[in-house]
Amino acid sequence: MTDPERFRTALAALDLPADWRVDVTIRPRRRRPAIEIKPGGAVVVLIPPMADPKQVARFVSSHRRWIAEKVDIAARLAPEHAVKEFVDGEEFELLGHRYRLQFVATPVGVEQLPAITSKGVLYARKQRPELVRRAVIGLYREVGLEWLRCEGRQYEVQGRIAGLTYAVRDLGRRRWGIYEGPPKHTTTLHWAAFGLPMRFIEYVLVHEQAHATQPGGSPHGRAWQRQMYLWMPDWRQRQTELADVGRHCWLGDHWPSTPLVSRQP
Image 1 (cartoon, helix red, strand yellow):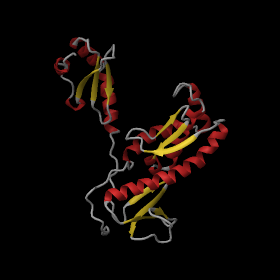
Image 2 (cartoon, rainbow, N blue to C red):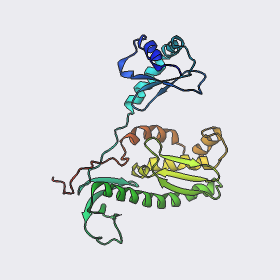
Image 3 (cartoon, rainbow, N blue to C red):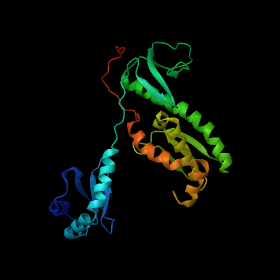
Image 4 (cartoon, rainbow, N blue to C red):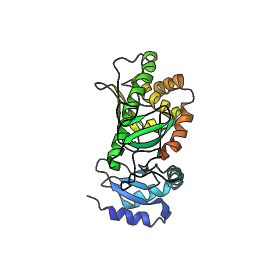
């Protein structure tokens, strides 16, 4: 297979900006070179195995302006996800409401733990931080799925969607939702999406429900866009805002060695 170092040497001769962090990846199935901008601004040049290093260098050089624009955008939108500290008083956002964590040995006025109250308290059992993390995420999934099934129903009726099912699970760090066509025919939202402001949770739901109206259609084609405008006229604005707001959302990161003590004022 082609030696990647030959391409790295050719690209180094272009004297590209150091903050671009350019690297190469050989892709056996590719026929033409391509450029991929990673979250955070890293630049990856995708290269066919039989490509000529000089041609690849010319290809990259001809796209300098495009790369500069995309790297700037990716750097500005680099994830800065929240990291939680599992101590009394830590705040969690869930379906547009804010809750303060409070550890208890046994349930207080609730059937099971963890639980949220109308007074803005998130009760959890005292245990190791990783176990608290799992319990809180489980709560997000439970509450989120109940909301999803309830709110999703109106779009099923309006969009004449039959036999749709719902799920809430971890979709990684780059997707808020996904629609899986037949035979699954399922709308799934990331559990962390329910920690976003309500306007963005609604956008993610509508985005996937629009896909469910045309399982075999173009993913984001004209029919999908028409459905989005029908259900949510300002969807493009919400989509743009989500790119910034979402990079600060809690995705489950926590300080693993945090002692179970109360936060001091």
